[in-house]
Image 1: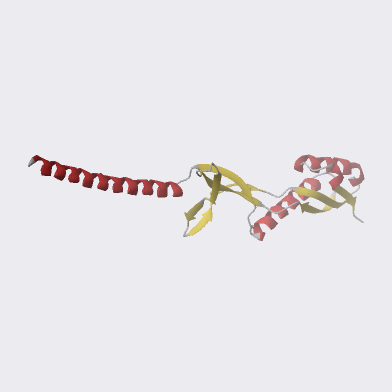
Image 2: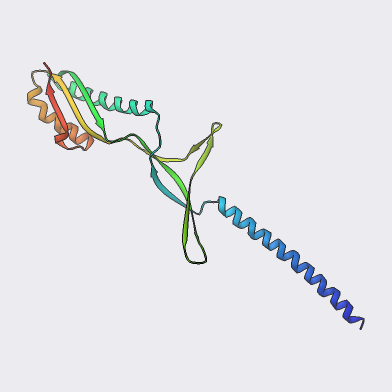
Amino acid sequence: MSRQPLNLKKMNNIRKIGKEKLILLALAGILLIGSSYFESVGHDKKEEPTTENNENSTQYENTIREEIKKMIEGIHGISDVEVMVTFQSGREKVLQEDSDNSTNEKGDTTVKKTTVILNQNGGDYPYVIKEIYPKIEGVAITASGERLTNKSAEIVNMVAALFDIPVHKISVINKK
C-alpha cells in the first residue's frame, strides 16, 4: 500500500504541471491573437479623397495656367494671352490601408480596414501611396495677334493633346 500514495502524489504533480502548462498555453494563445490584431494581414490600396491644403491646389492650377500661357505666347504673332482652366475635382491622395479578414463560426467573413499611420517629425501622418492631381475639365484662352485666327485650331489641338480633354471643351477667342 505504500506504493499507492506515492503514485497519487506523482499524479497530483503531473496534474499540477498539466494545469500550469495549460495556463501558459492559453496565455501564449491570447498573446498571439493580440499581436496578430496589430499586425497587418494584407495591404489594400484604397483611394480616399483627403482634404488638401488650398495653397497646394492653387499652386498646381496656377502652374498649369502659366505653362499653357507660355506655350501660346511662344507662337509667332500671338501676344497678350490669358488662360482660364476649370478642374473636375480637387487633389486626392491614395492612402495605404491594412485589412484584417476574419471568419466566425457561422462562416460570415468580416473585413476590418485601418489606415497606416506614420510617426514623423513629431506628428502622425497617413501613409500616402500616390497623389492624384485634378483632371482638367475645360480651357478658355483669350489672346491678341494677327495670326490668332490662323492658329486657333492648332492651339485647340495642342491643348487637347496635352491634357486629354475633348476639343469642344477648349475655346480660343481673339481679344479686342
